[in-house]
Length: 255
Ligand code: F6R
Image (cartoon, rainbow, N blue to C red):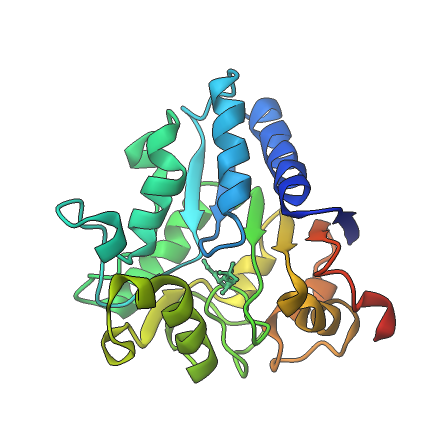
């Protein structure tokens, strides 16, 4: 595991985009695992810049980590009112590049049969040759994707109930400003499992800001535990990069 500490969010984002860009350049048909949330937005902006400078995404395939159950991309709604992760990816990255729609995979939050869908998603990742590079954030409770505390470190793609902390975080970040009540936000999600994530060929975990400092320290230097599912990064024995800003790294030496 290589920990790269940058002076601020912009530098963190540039560093991550550069690594992803190198992979896309060296392996134009690579498979990227992608994340949503506030953290990777800067990385996606930097990737869009690389696209505008000639980086070609036409053969890249993507698989997103997760999606809320019960919602899906709805372009008839304003972006503010469509909180699906499929819409997020469309607005923050895909529509600004030449990535092909048929190469993009976000779990289907509107599926009638979530169990069957989750198996299909696992199979689709395998059929694509597996994920070359998985981009990850880390939740306030230490989750990776929506693998909330208590999730098995060998879990696969499945439906997961979101914790109160995650509901609070999501409400603050995405729903409050849109005037959506906390009771009406999705309480379940489809998520790749920790076992699924650990099969990627390489990982990048991003975190920024003081509020992530303690959980980053626990994940990287604390016990490997289902209480902090991101601690599974310590089990990953291929290339992994933890790309942080100074604040998110500030508790690392104190654990
Ligand atoms: C999103 C995801 C989540 C986020 C995490 C951090 O696809 O998998 O685990 O990475 O909740 O979210 P932010 O970046 O908003 O702090």
